[in-house]
Amino acid sequence: MPMPTLLTITIFLPLVGALLLMAAPSHAYKLARSTTLLIALVTAGLSFYLASAFQVDQPGAQFSKIEGYGTAAPHYGSQWIQIGNGPGIRFALGLDGVSLSLFLLTTVLMITAVCAAWEPIKERGPKFYALMLVLQTGLLGLFSSLDVILFYVFFEFTLIPLFFLVGLYGGPQRKRASITFFLYTLVGSLLTLLGVIALAVIHAQHSEAHVLTFSIAELTEGLRNLKWAPWLELTSVFQSHDFTVLGHRPMFSPQALIFLLLFAGFAIKLPLFPFHTWQPLTYVESPTAVTILLAGVLAKVGSYGFLRFNLGMTPLGSQYFMPLMATLSVIGIIYGALIALAQTDLKRMVAYSSFSHMGFICLGLFSLTAVGVDGATIQMINHGITTAALLACVGVLHDRYQTREMNEMGGLWQRLPVFASFLILAALGSAAVPFLNGFVGEFLILLGQFARSPFYAALATIGMVLGAYYLLVMLEKVLFGRLKEPVHVGHHSVGNHHDLHGHSEHTNQDHGHLHGHHPVASEPATKRLHWYELLGLVPLMVLIVGIGVYPKPILDRIGPPLREIGRGFYQPNTPANARPAADPQHPTTPVTGTPSPETGRPRLAAHTSTPQERSR
Image (cartoon, rainbow, N blue to C red; front, top):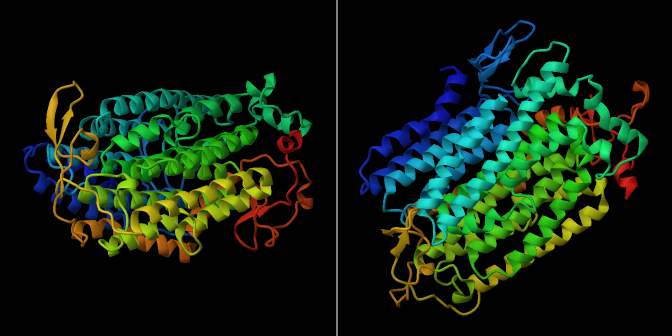
């Protein structure tokens, strides 16, 4: 079977399964969950088969259909909508090293999400699992899109299942959470659409070929080589050292304005301070299975958009706003860690922890150094794994005790020793302990940011220490000391909810302790994890250790696309024969556009202070 066809099947297989589940009766939740798990396993198997066929040294996107191959202007995918005399909007799917990593993350976390919903979701189960599969298709299509309009279609498509998953299956405030999330994301994404259209129009009007294209690769390359003077206006700002975010002329340059339009949608998805206010409520009110995909995958859509669009297509705007982005990132890191430290609800703590750690990813991206961007990209994967593992562990506890309050439990190591080992490993991975996955990403991020600005790196380190502290406090409260088991209502609770229209309904959820119940004592919770809980957690534990010990396979695959993005950044004018060679002893210096013949990594210039650093 041709690889482009296999990629398409992998993306749309969950959607086919969702259509079948929509026809199932509402009481057939056992059939629905088994079918969904089977589809998730098959989809993951196909994705790893694609990964095994991925050629590390091959440039550009792979597994994509190419029309006009061998001609002067081949195009990815097939024509979808003809516009003007160009290639138009194309149905183009493919994977490079960065998108492949996020593609695999999505398929793995879908298995964990299905397992987390195995017992809590029973009422209207088939509809729930169908919406989950629709969401998976949206996420897989988004990460594999090679056309900006197709990317935007999938970007918006994810809103539909999430709105119903949160609004119909969430906690007591689910109506508010779903509407807040929907409105925040919709407004931001519409501004991002304006930015995307502006990029395509500017490229069509001012490129040498004057062809309207929506190809991500063609736009990235074409905009990088654009000779239109206003597009390059920010270079004069860098050269003159007249660098101020409040300066009238730079703020209204095309790259700066389009950067802000793109920023609007991606900052909300990330979420980045101060656009995060939808996140804690939505994460807490969502069923645990949905929160796993929200925190583990959907948040990466924002950072992926920053990388692919802001850094790739508006590189001068990214450099211009670099101090602002670093400031917002550091505020988010410290603020999120402090709020997480004050939480007693486990799920709320993980929500604020996720917000804090996403600030690290943004900080690494906008360090604009080779090692910092590498670290941010691999940290997208690591954060998804550790956050999903923590949330799955929270779901295990809630499934047994119907509470997430840390103060109501203690000494659970004695009752659930295997679970305790999983929770410890997930927490230590999130705390960036060496030889676990979180350390790889955060170490590279801090290393890259230190080369750019030691001040921001030092502030981020404070957030890292706070993160380790609140995670260790959580472990001490929940697992160690005298055994203290919460009273509970049996293995699964039943709550009274109100649907989106305010009508009362009888549903099974993982929010039972919030619904006004007065739990009564019951039999001790089971000591053993069920098979579906092990299936959801064991692969994540393997990845936490495996990536921490040997991250090279991921770093090798993300390197080529990141080098290509790095070619667009401004560097001070120097004669070509005077450009310094790569220095393997200083791998943290800013990215330039020339690959090193010795290492194949981006050629790294000697670090000098940038105009924005001198302006401080």
